[in-house]
Length: 95
Image (tube, rainbow, N blue to C red; front, side, top):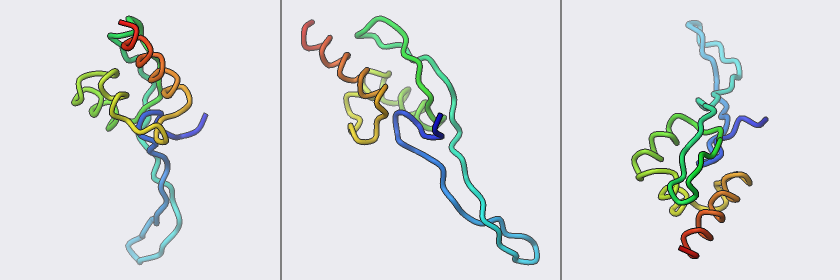
């Protein structure tokens, strides 16, 4: 399982540990990923995703999963999230 947010595409970054003596060694900054189940109002069911804490706050700020996915760019979304986005769009078009 990759360390990448399924909604924002946020992944690991690299940098340096810097000691008091100013020695530098390489390190990785990992995103704060959480396994969550977000409720889709259009589909009427929950969707399990592995997203960052910042993405979870963004979903709440935009008004839920459906509103977030409607505005999200397709290249940032994972295959699973893109599939859910298309299901929501299809359900809204038929309703």
